[in-house]
Image 1 (cartoon, rainbow, N blue to C red):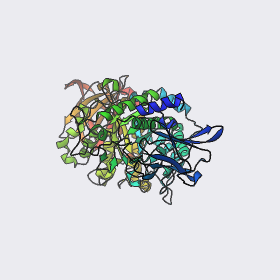
Image 2 (image 1 turned 120 degrees about the vertical axis):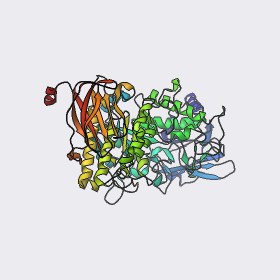
Image 3 (image 1 turned 120 degrees about the horizontal axis):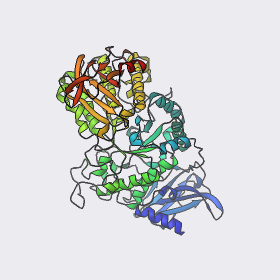
Image 4 (image 1 turned 90 degrees about the vertical axis):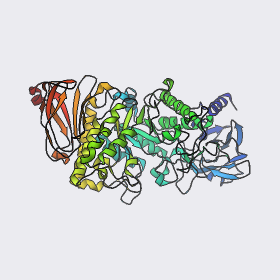
Length: 631
């Protein structure tokens, strides 16, 4: 073994490798002037390993592998060709042989076949250099972030029910998202997975895009199309667990090498999956390299890490657990791993969006690792989501009893860098679609939903919404079919889509809604405590001091002459309201309000607003009446 390879394998073993995929897996190579493919696999406790595939008639005796050190086996074939199927025949110490797919394989066969494919990723011609240069100059925390969450298999399908491939999806989805005013597309996991109803959250091939939507090169083209449309791409990623399919990572060499060895701690019983051993160097290298792989090879812009809470706590969904060395329930190895992961990602790709889906009050998720945090850039605000969906599901007459649901989030809104998520998890399993969560009559459901969306767009925090929410799907999300696009033939659904599009572009065009998302300088309550009328009002402020006043009425009652304090003696002009008839509103239009001298709480000026029922209205302050006409 040469010194370079030895150093690479040593880094792999110690958990310091960021590109283990460059030395493990299947790669083109030349040995003794013969071109072929070099296979390497980590199976530290195996008795023997062979490469079997189309190129040797699946004969395990034809291409035995040699242990080269650090638990890594190697073999070279001059007969292997691009696109051919292969597996590793791994013989455990007890003599049992199991056929395993390549953990570092970059393409897989179509199910029910579970083999890897010989696949080289070189040669794709990218056209996104200008986009990537622009992203490198962008400060995400001070920029708009409006994410459209997508399940690739059910956004839209062919008429015969078959999937769009990645290229077909990109050519339709990217222009749609650009037109609608989204900044990023987040894909549910597109790594290879065996069970379609898992939506990709039980991964067998971490380095392989699923066969369902095409080839690796087609996924690259999808990302390229998105970038050419000015859209970033975020991938959901699942390091919390993996399934127990025999051909996958499960007991790969006959022992628990990827998963924890402790029988009490190695499984998520609820999910029927195994838990990675984050304290093992080779496993850390496997996972960290996987993130670098997607960022480097596929030019993706961000990684959303799924189920972080399950990684952080040893007692997660357990009655019994082994505490850490200090007697606590925190998973110290997982914490160290996440810090190392985020540090590696930002060192390699400074503009990357590292996002945690974390549902507890674990502190400092988005603080740097060197400062005691986990080092993510963003965290999903699950508390805001739960409070708001509970509040919006209530009959408006009872909302005053839960007014705290509207306002409590501002007690912690700046403790982390938050994304406000209305994700796929909120529109499945009997939770109802967003529209059917709303109470009231047909028109009231739409009015409630518009009010909620308007409140969300103005609230501190970046935004994420699942596909179909924008045109008010009636039914819950169904992974096995496309969205109900035919609903756009009905006026209310078309108007809802128009409202969301207008809202999104208003958000993009007004820095007050995103420039100061991480501190109190960007937010001020005007009215927080009027629970009896279910009214809240606040202002958002950009770094130049320009502000937008937001007035929300969560009750189906018109409020005329509604008085509140304002910071300036300006004319407050309504520029966007959900009550506008063109969006399906009731046509009760707010009017210009004038700030006049008079003390009101902390303010020295007051004004009177006309607040339509079940509505949100955005006001722009104008210094003079003349400015209203000259705008």
